[in-house]
Length: 198
Image 1 (spheres, rainbow, N blue to C red):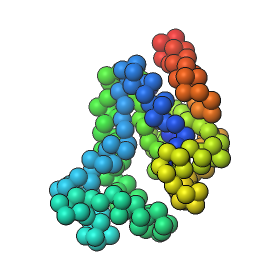
Image 2: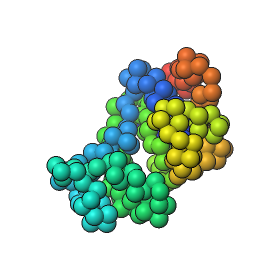
Image 3: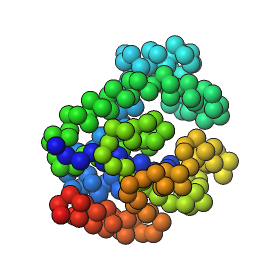
Image 4: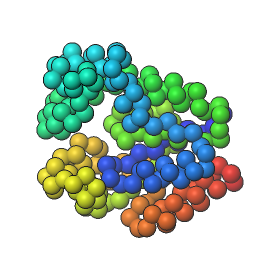
């Protein structure tokens, strides 16, 4: 039975860099973002529920979810964002836990990549939590650059998550990503060598 490592961070802290190291070492990855997209595919019960709450204007002509439209609604309205999370949470949790159980017998380490790990209460379903960390001011600059956002737009997205400093304090493991990508990758590799293969 493998160790289940919950991996989180903040938006634009570099989580995908850390995930790529685990992937290159062939550890199974449970990716909450992919699962979140799959549960709202056309015909799935979660999409029907979202439409029932937010109306059919969040769909495109083909009847699929228009993510941009939904994003505009929820990032500017705290109440509606919470409502969306409430609606999707049971569907997401069931799919994530099913995938964790399927994979933890297959490898010595399973990575559960969940951006809102603490916010969604997933820390109770994993053995340890690793946080990919950069200070908020670096996070802000990276996010503006990456997604071509104004400072105000980027700050709204950062504020929609638990502060990165709070996540850092709660974590069992911290992968600091303030320096070069190579340094971050080396740190992850060292952690795996010591804790999984050691």
